[in-house]
Amino acid sequence: MNMPPPRLRALLIDDEMLARLGLRQALATHPEIEIVGECGNANEATQAIDALAPDLIFLDIRMPGLDGLALLRTLPAGATPMVVLVTAFDQHACNAFDLDAIDYVLKPLDQRRFDRAIERVMARWTERGHVPVPVVTETFRERLSVRQGEHIRVLRAEEIDWIKADGNYVRIRAAGAEYMHRETLACLEASLDPSRFQRIHRAIVVNLDRVSEVHPLFHGSFEIVLRDGTRLPLSRRFRGRAGQTLGLR
Image 1: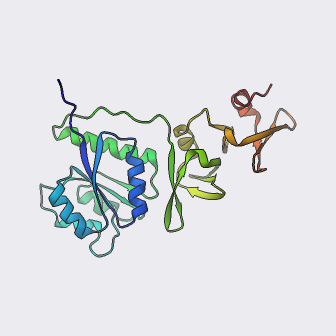
Image 2 (image 1 turned 30 degrees about the vertical axis):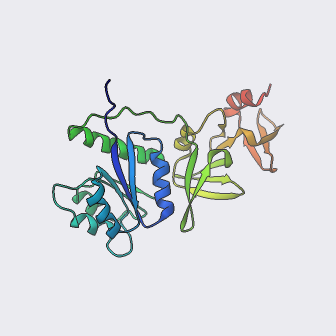
Image 3 (image 1 turned 45 degrees about the vertical axis):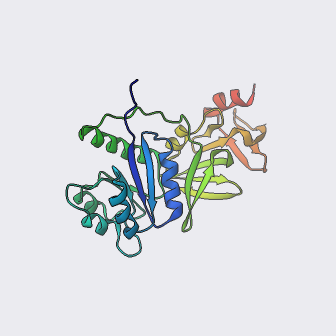
């Protein structure tokens, strides 16, 4: 009986528990990677790398005491695991690649950008002579990590009422609050279940489960009323698809 190829073993290193939770969420769609441990500082990480010998580390840069870049410099040459730097600060990119980091992704995590980093990791893994693990991913995103002050809030997709474009960001209304999230509306919409979330305007995606009424306006346009009384425009351009789902005639 053929055994499946071993999964790539990863260690998460970040002093923020919520940031590590965000990494776990982002890795949930990558069964080819196994999380073997978590560390909250460089001292813990040094011991864990020595004891666990991970293939890959996800490393924050700014941590109390020894920072992430300094930690990389302490590791023995030629024996270091692959590294993906995950940080809220983008000014360290050049230093990161000088230290042979495979990629550099910013917080809060953008799932599609994170997935591209994993593609680079797996390409490097294959270059090292390992057999790639077959990838089976979820079709649609079920959770989303958003920044809330100094914290990261994990939202369930079902909590979202609507999403509005705001440049390269989106505003998300969910669980009675609004959040800014660094992702384009098109990318976020593509990752959500289209039977639940649909574009009703060039700048608005709505959770169809929240719709309570649809009011005709003029020139073929409609207004959608959500359960909480929020009114959103349904433009002519998107009436066909959304109207079919909502039973409009």
